[in-house]
Figure 1 (cartoon, one colour):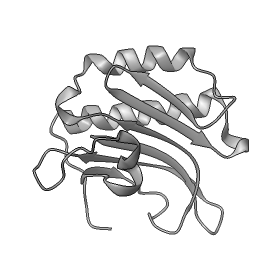
Figure 2 (spheres, one colour):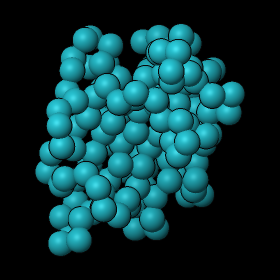
Figure 3 (cartoon, one colour):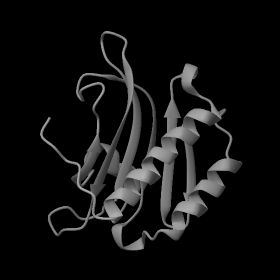
Amino acid sequence: MYATAQRVQDRSGRTAVHVFVHRHDASDCPFPTDPRTVPQSMPGRLVWRNAELVPPGGNAVLSFVDLIVPEERWHGGLAADVQARAKEASVVQVPLEIRVGPVLVIFNALEAHREAGEFTLLLERVLDAILRVGSGASQVAPR
């Protein structure tokens, strides 16, 4: 599974947080050996998206949190463990990588967005989206 929250800015200066959840739950989209390759090379099958205020595509990414974990290794209890570990983390140096068992969390941001509050907000959005997907919510609409 790959879930990401991205603070984006369009060409007119409007900002929004986009959230996407992808799954690696089929033979045609397996989870790769190296989880760091997921965001750019093997994101998986898009199953949930919230990108309403600023249409996706062509935006500058100001900050992001990626959560990457093999599908079969995720369980709801990991969310609390990830949040607890994130509270201990310092966002002074980016990219920040946190490992919690099988979960890899990556935070990166432009200098103006490197603050604990930004990391926490984006992480909460990611975990909320994963919870929605786990509850059977579907929000993948045409662009």
